[in-house]
Image (cartoon, rainbow, N blue to C red; front, side, top):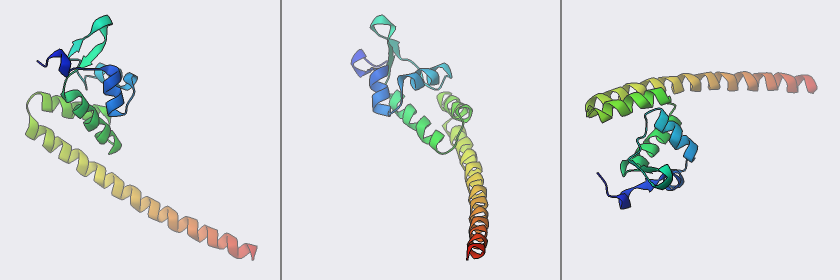
Length: 126
């Protein structure tokens, strides 16, 4: 267990991770982030890996993962099933890539339709 000097309070962790304290508490409620100890007045204190986990969560959210999916990955990792977690992450990323490709195709089609409609409008204005 880390010594108290290696612990961060929630405000410091929030500042370092670029998220709010409220977000950290919410992630704790969901089981995504563990409190290492309690400080004076019951302040939440977090260990060394809390910042890494927060950055991991933020990155996966940015890639379109749900908090439930992230939680499943976290639980697999916590149980020492790194290869299972990586396989699951690989599957999630493949799915997300397929969704992005589909959305890109939809946007290309929308772009073509907008350009066509815009041209027809301009022709009627002339």
